[in-house]
Amino acid sequence: MDSLNYVKEELGLSLDINPELAAAREIRRSLRFTSEIHTSSLAKARLELAEIKVFDHSPLAGKTIMEISKAYKQSVLFCLIERDDDLIIPSGNTIVRANDKLVLTGRTKQLQSFFNELKILKNDPIKEVMIIGGGRITYYLTPMLSELGIAVTIIEKDAEKCLKLVESFPYATIIHGDGTDHELLMSENLEKMDGFVALTDNDEENVMVSMFAAAKGVSHVIPKVNRVELGFIFEKLGLRNAITPKNITANHIVSYVRAMQNSLGSNVESLLKIKDERIEILEFRVRQNCRLISRPIMEIGFKPGILIAYVTHHGEPKVADGQTKVALGDTVIVISKRKGLSDINDILA
Image (tube, rainbow, N blue to C red; front, side, top):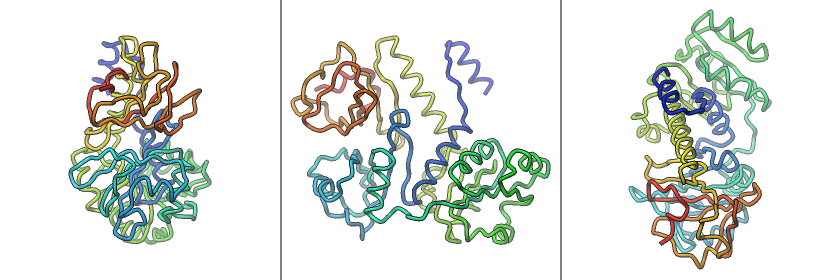
């Protein structure tokens, strides 16, 4: 963190970075959905970005995006399809296939309703969560879960930390013990838990104990991992909701730096990179020089690999369609296979 503070001072940045708080927020968000759905925030938390895998039995398999939109009336946007190694920005005629990974955006309630219709959202609310490790993320996460009415059990092997946890969270159950001990986990009713979060400082321990929890039927399992390079193995292990604080922090920094460029002529308000940074999701502010103003989107030519996803007018994001027009002061959310866009006019053909 010293080197980060040095860079902030040298560049005159005012960004306060709290990786643990950001990680706790991501965990809280992930716990709202099933393990089949991976989510993150978008557009300054006004929207959610969700990814689901299409299995053989899915009602989405074999249908076009247009057919799906007509069958399910929820206002969600299909913004990306990952098919093998290809990333496809779909049109209405794009056919969804089994084993595709779909990236959707929408408000939380819209996504929940859509997933309910697909029967991939657990109807029963989360009531109990077990957390392994009593570090800083746990200190942020525990009150967040308590506010949602979720009972929290924390297992920590350091006795002194346990005493501090008891003082800080009298409403939680604090267990002094080794959270990687399978017998201890079972004695503390692991199988009855709705969620399990592994937050020790050891990546391997977090992964292994999370695999054990998943094998015992816990529906929401979230390991924390610090090594970004381990990310590719999570899905193979059935741990699609792993949290990587370094990735979360990097996205915050990149988004902030791009937004800082506003004073230098850029109009990027926020930025999220996904799919190993092959896709950028940008929110542009519409300024006087924007060549999209007052023109229906269907009449505008865009560069390949660009999707106009949402237009936010007076703080209200709406899915863009062919008739949508943007106005001065609006923000426009763009899904792009192109990198380094800094001005909304850069998307024009």
